[in-house]
Image (cartoon, rainbow, N blue to C red; front, side, top):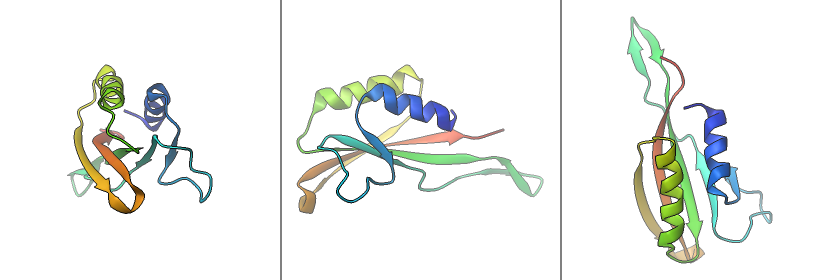
Amino acid sequence: MTRAQIKTILENIGLPYEYDHFEVGKAPALPFIVFTYPQTENFGADNKVYAKINYIDIALYADHKDFALEDRIEAVLDEYGLFYNKNEVFIQSENAYQITYELEELING
């Protein structure tokens, strides 16, 4: 998976999205998506990075639990044959759900 493919995947989900955060005052109404590359777990060989592996978090923010929307997101991820893990928290101060899909991106190798 490439960064260009991530962009295509996010566009196919059909919600507004941004990397890391929306500018103050420019966030769209919920639901929307924010994605990040929070860390790497590279594979090494011969004392160098042999394969670069980025973690990707795709976080859905919604003001109510929307199973149909989550099913739609998962259908897009499944369409691309992506393995993901999912976790959910309710952010009390924002009165919003954060549903995060954790994936990996192989850069080379």
